[in-house]
Length: 259
Image (cartoon, rainbow, N blue to C red):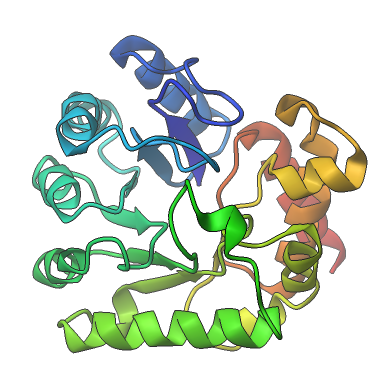
């Protein structure tokens, strides 16, 4: 899954693909490099990010969705949003998936939209929002609690009419977890694979990798990201959400050849 941030302030590439033309060019390059799903987002979810509002998200996303569907009709488009109105408009415009980093906490109405459209839904574990999540890392056992909180949101989704085969789970690396907690989850990724849903991991260039490597520049964390990607392949993860598509495709291919 390739990251296409149509934003001004995403932590790694904010502003680079913020206009229509650059977003299209970048998405097409990602497909050329091996991306099998495009994840478009017009709302940064980095710690501290401000909410841009649904109108701006819709205004930025819809033209890009329509153009990409015209150019690459067979490539699934995922929309990174936690607003039901954005999800609905995007799906109406031709999007295929919804990737909700709040797991339905921010706007439970999103479950009804997902149920109505019958589309794949990435349900992510997180706590709070971009402004508060760094203060919500108090876990007695991070692995057990993340699994339990994911399960609770899954039950809410199912009770709203979403069906099991639509759900993809994401343990939310970097969302309301500190460095040690992220590493614990990465060491135990098989625990999420055993939950019997497809698993997506979005750890690309994230802060915990920078902390381990003592690398403050997100764009220089590719080797740390590659190590995480290889670990995920070994664990049986289904989807990797990444910035560096060509390089991580090589990591995936090589890892699969030796396990």
